[in-house]
Length: 192
Image (cartoon, rainbow, N blue to C red; front, side, top):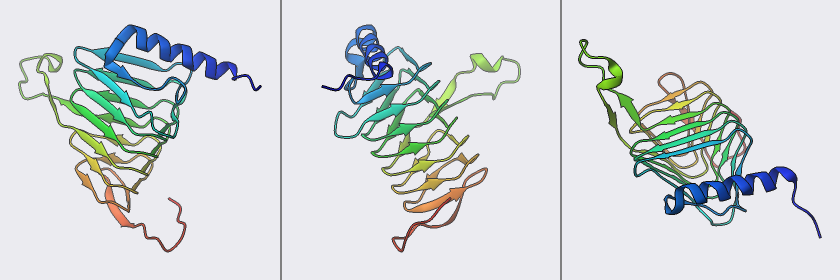
């Protein structure tokens, strides 16, 4: 009989802690979700975290953070978050199956309001709009996905990109803001 590795035992204990702390506001299989060292989860107000329990492990590497402040984060099976990813859901972030996120990727479904120069920005509130990421997407290191963005299935987003708006399926995007460079066809393997 094979014994689980200590890091997997610690991850399962973190998962049990989050289940006890947040109750029905979190849904995930503790044996199919890996929470790496330094992972932080915060649920504020009506915030919810839902991770698919279908086949395929969801993996949060070291120092990832998730904040659901009255919003919902929904993650499909087989998703991988590299070190230092930061996800903040004030409304809704949906991620499809088998996606990869490079180190330090950030997803924010809200922006602060700054219209009144006589009032501190932190007290002006924020606007929010859902983020939807399809299946089999790869978002490169240090990319930022902003509110209201949609990334189609099978899409690659290059390193250091800023995603705003709608990204077509089966395409390669890069830049600030991210622009379509070319399609990704079925003719053979490509690299970003």
